[in-house]
Image (cartoon, rainbow, N blue to C red; front, side):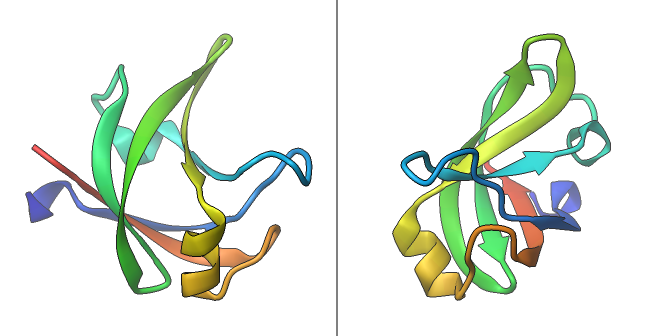
Length: 91
């Protein structure tokens, strides 16, 4: 399982205040994936948080996952903060 672990830096995004925060995952971080999958997520060494990682769709090759307010609070992160994300796919 750990061989599939990937870590990268990115920003916490949010389109509108009333919508959930999310992380965009570039295709090179999910090589070989074409559909949604479940993974444990670490945010700056905080977690793990179980999230569903889904294709963005609409002609894009990126994936994304949502973050809850309690997860962001626990990790000490706000919208637009840069963070280190680790994805550990579940089997």
